[in-house]
Structure formats: C-alpha cells, structure tokens
Length: 629
Image 1 (cartoon, rainbow, N blue to C red):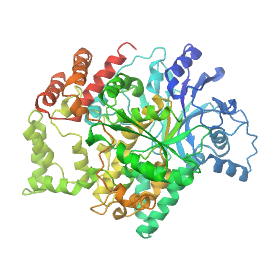
Image 2: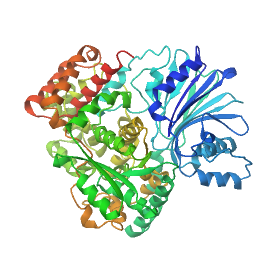
Image 3: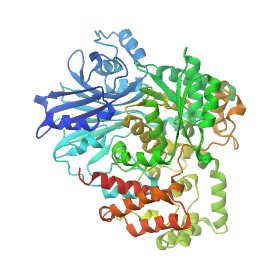
C-alpha cells in the first residue's frame, strides 16, 4: 500500500513540487519516499511507500522495467501476482527479477502483455501510473470495484495525478477553485461521486477504467476495462444452475481462495471483527487457513444500541482468535473530529467513518494489514432498503394509486415544481412520481424538501444513480444492488475504508470484493441472497459451517456512533454551533445558510434528525480547514 503522484509537461520546479506532493501523503507511505525525473520527456513520478511485500530496496518505487522502457508507480496489492509470475514464465518471458514484490511482476506483465490483457489478469486492489518512455504515453489505471483512489487533472498547464487531493493542493499554482456544480450531489449523498471532485478541473478516475495521456499531455482518453453493469447482465443471462447448497460450496471455495491470497504479507496482519455476518465469515476463513491465532479487532460503545463489541468478543472466543477490543466514547469521537478534513481531503460525511477510523487506529497499534468484511451487503442483498423495497413501493402506490399513472405523475411533477418550500407538497410530489424500484432508490436521498435547495447552484451534474437505466435487471432488488455497487460502494464505503485506514498507515483489504466473487454473485438467483425473509442467505449458509447459527441470529446494530444524540446537547453541540458560526461567511457562497439553520433548529429544538445536517457540518469544517491552504 502506498501513495502515488506525478506531473507531466511540468512548468516549474518539478523536484520541489513532487517532494511537496509526496509530503502531503506521508501517512499513505511512511516507510520510504522516491521520485523519478524523466527530464527529456518533462515527466516526473513520485511515490510514498508503506512496505508490505519485499521490504528491501528491491521493492522501492518508482520502478523501471527490466528493458528500461517503462516506469511505474503503484498503490495497492496484486493478490494473484505469484500466478501471473508463473504465467509470464510459461509464456516465454525471460526476466531476471531483482526482488519478490508484486509491483515488479505487474510492471513486467504490462511490458510483456500490454495494458488490456494485463488488466484482465489482475485480481487485486490498485491504482497505478505507467509511463512508456518510448512512445511518450502515460497510462493511469484503477481497480474493478474502486478500492484504491486516483485523482487527475490540470494545474497551470500541467497534467497531474495523485492518490490524494492533498497532494494536488500542494502543487505550486493550484487555485483550489471549488466546483459548485457538485455540491447538489454532495448535500444529497454526503459524498462526491466519481468522476467528480470538489475542485474544478480535477477528477476521479472511474473504477474499472484506464486513462491514456499522450505527450504533450494536454488531452486524455478514458476506457473501461471492467463494467459491473455488463457483469450483472451477463450473470443473469448465464445463471448458476446448482442448488443453494452447491452455491454455498462454490462461494466458500472462492472466498477461501480470496482470503488466502489476501493473507500474504511480510508484515503483521489481522482483521476487523464487528460481530456481523460479513466480517465473521472473513475471520472464520482466515482462522481456518492459519496455523496460529488470527489477530482481530473491534471497538465498543457504552450506548447499548450502538454496541457490537459483546457479540464480536463471543465470536472471537469461539473461533479462537487473538482478540483486542477497545471501548470508546464521546471524548474519543470529539478528539477525532479535527482529523476528518486531513484524512479525507474533500467533503465526506458518512458518520460511520468515525468508528472506522477508531478501529483502524486500534489495529495499527498491532498490525500493518487488516482484512474487513465490506461488500457483503451490496453483493448479497443485505441492506434494510432492499428488505423494505416492496413495502415501501406499496405504501407509495397506495397513496396515489387511485389515479391513472400519467395523471398521477403529472400531478407529482407539478407538486415538486411548486413545493420546494412546502413539506406537504414535496411529499406529494415524491410519492406521485415513484413507480419503480429505481425511482424509490433515487427518492431516498431527498427525504426533505430543503435538501435539493441547500446548494446555491443546485445539482448541475448527474450521478450514476440519475443515469441508471431503469429495468436493466430482472428484479427491483437486483437493480438496487447494482445501483449501490456502481455508486454507494465505491464512492462512500470504499472511500471510508481506504482513507480511514491509510490515515493511520494501515492497509485495509476486502476479500469479498475479489473480482471472481463479484462475478459469481451476479450469477446467483435472487432467492439465494434474499428469499423475502432472510437476507445474505448464501453467505449465512457458508458462515454456519464455522459458527453456530444461534450465535449469529441477533439484531444487527450497524457500524455507527450516536452522533444524532450527541449533537443535541453538551460539548458536541457546542462544537457544531462553533462550526456553523465560524464557517458561515465561508459557506454562504455555496449553500443556503438559512436552510441549514432551519435543519439544525429541527434537531436541537424538536429532536428531528436528518443526516444532511451532518453533511453541512462536515462541509463547513472542511472549508474552515482548507481556507489557508
């Protein structure tokens, strides 16, 4: 795990700039730093290293290929690098390796096979930059599901890229102009979806894509090498024909292989254990594959409704792991709040980032790599929004079902048009314009009439959910899962996991998002995932081979902290009011502060919680933290 940076067609002071960019991501790679200046080509590549495999200088980056034609900077892990290394040998590649790193295998595979074929072979999480010195072409690539980040764009006539926006902020001449067109999306979702960033002219490389930039590096072309939509459609066209039991056996085989690959490291390794199905399944397989106790970590809260530490401790004892738990409280969260803008570097407001940061900090005291169970909900129909889909649609249609569809939608659109200030008309508009699961999904982000009006410039960019083709898949549940895999998973969950871990120089790995598992999941009948009563059915069937059913059949509380309660009084309320006050002058250019005040008043005076007030607080705190950069 590392951080990468680069400048092409640089204008001034390339070495000073790359050093400044590298310094901003020291937390992503505290073990070593490096850069490679290709002065003739006006290209400079930078790297910060967190040593995981090949701890010697033989794994140092930037790295040149054996024929010296290519140079690479790489962030992530190629879990099947040993298989690729063997395939290179079988296919006639004559290579003398200087070390045992996955970076070197990736580089030689790119040199031998080319970009497209190599990307099809990879099983891992990655973002890398490859420079072809012969053709003067830069390639940027990002993994299939979007586990690793990569930003790119233009700064003062130079093409730049980095793992983190903080690196781009550090460049000489960067103007930090906020792209107000993304704020409507941010205040709806609490994150900025790809391909956008908070800054104008800076973008996120989309998951499963690679970018080609040719000298003089003033234009670029993006190409998809992996499409989750195509995987889902193909899976439904070629469904798994076996029984539920056979499906569980195949999932166990694939997940065991993924876990085994992801347990390869030259540094201490452990896992998060939350007490839920997904992390327990991962830990169960880890322990079954290990000849020593697996290190597991969890945090607990004194507030019983938010505490899963007791369940995690019970499961750890049954599985025989070396378990570490830490109970945290209000003070720990308060101490963490100032670090959020530093960790995430653009506005991000999923409040579960707080426990994720706390458990990452705990794990880093003992290990350098940690596996997690993220992805299980999206792959195997685990969220309550999926469970509640049919009842939600039924309720909506009942309210307007007495009207013909065309008339109902017309009334709905009119109500939305005139109901911006009327909660009643807004609710009528939302209800009367929902017909499909996809409509229902989109409406969930706009539960209050004020949300769509918070951003002064409105929502001028579409998100993936806005562009999603209704009815692409056979059922509403599957369409919702695909929408989440296309947007919520990469832009919220994986951002949270990456930034929270890397802030403490901890590499987080996610076995459930192995490409083969993702593809297999889309071949399964919906009833193997959700039968109308049981969610994540196939994953639970696998888990019950390792852990007693009665141990797992408990209500899941979710990985959250009680911010909605803490914000209503005491020190956290004081902190929030300070943010709203100090950030008011900065924020009024971008958001309707009166609307934000009304949402805050709803919480403090009426106890009405909208997650969007947290979105406002995180945005204003980010503005305050970045005003002098």
